[in-house]
Image (cartoon, rainbow, N blue to C red; front, side):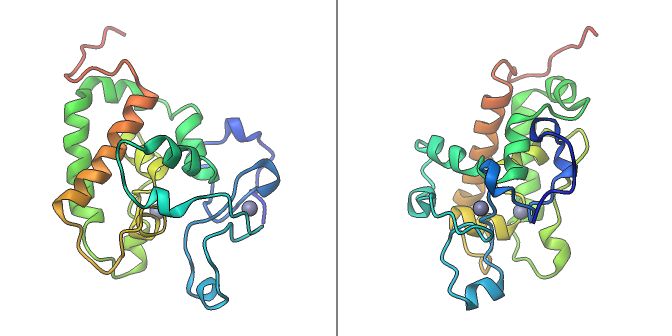
Length: 197
Ligand SMILES: [Zn+2]
Ligand SMILES: [Zn+2]
């Protein structure tokens, strides 16, 4: 499988990436799952396309907010997540974030996680609940950190889809969003900034 675009990876926007489209030769894999079929075939955590097994899942699934660098380095091996981590964000995302400030964004992240992610998924729509376009930086943070849906959350962070998230699991997800914000916008203020442009 290949991404259906001629663009260099550094110019891709999140919307142009399907997480099911790995690009193994360039170092981007597809771990998230497993699908039922892959599980039946004895799939055990490697890239579904090339079998790459370089990720230490146990370490990531300890969910230690003080040991996130390894988690983040591993997340960047999936193409959509890498694009959300590294590439230029859509126009308007950064100004919209500054206008609100970090405290308000994290409060919003908590609302999103609580309303859309914490519940047990029932239908297909519950796995497509996080947009890959628009001005909301929380959505990019969710794709980057695999807190975008319960399938990703289960696979990467080891929280089963069969339970409603508790307070500490919700806080862990928000903690990941916060680290993403610190990484992408190190000069983001806690409080709203007046825009002069
Ligand atoms: Zn691969
Ligand atoms: Zn997801």
